[in-house]
Image (cartoon, rainbow, N blue to C red; front, side, top):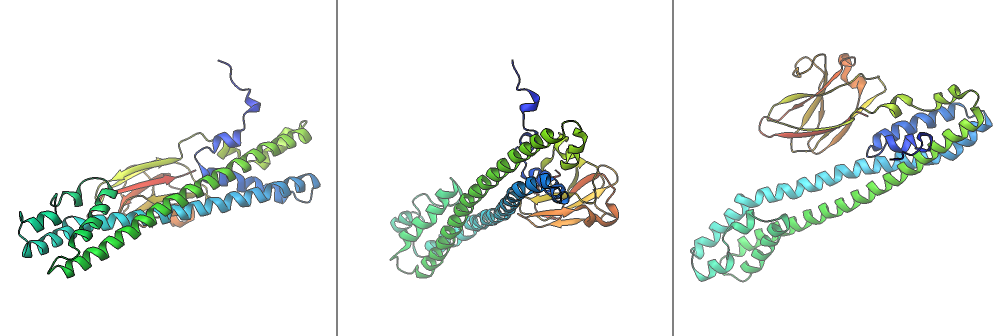
Length: 318
């Protein structure tokens, strides 16, 4: 099997696949180093070409991150409504109908042909449709005007939440496409800059290294971690050494607030450490200095701050 010649492989493009945060970090480093050398016409020209691409990448990345939070919020809103649907709301509606039309009667059967199953079984769309169909079935039924009004309001809330979720997903997908385009453009230009620098500094290639964040580019360690936490549980995510300029993107993908902390030893609980909270369904970029007296500790840990619900985390330490 023939392999592509090493020097024809774009290291910037390859090392940032599926990791936009890493792309931004590499881009910011070179953009700043070029700016420092802007008095030299050679580097000034490179900066003028690259800086707009860097700004586009940062902008697309920030929009993508913000939209991701919006999508999670929309998803949770719909999930919360569906959680209220069964047995809460549907049970109230069922009991209200039974007061006037006993189970087994023709009118009760017309209103609830499959009893309560449509409200807890099937897809999300099936359950949303079940409420909309109940609204139609209750229309004109004597004595059920109050119940109909409640069903109508709840059905409208479900429809709005579903629309918000679908719209957020579509917007998030577009934002993801935009940041990927910006990543490709920036990383290809970095490869071009490397080539131009080699052309100018081939006799002294060591001078080129100051322009690129080699420690990040060469780092092939895993950078994205995900996991679940039991009620009140904690665990060690990964061991790393951090600089004070580093950040950690911590997300709570579930319905619980999480706390991140740097421990001195593995499998230690949060007691005695600086804990940085991340709200449910949110992402927070945590600067290492925020851990205050624990900034030299190497074990990144997470704790579920809920005593009733399980949690889920997603962390990027690139």
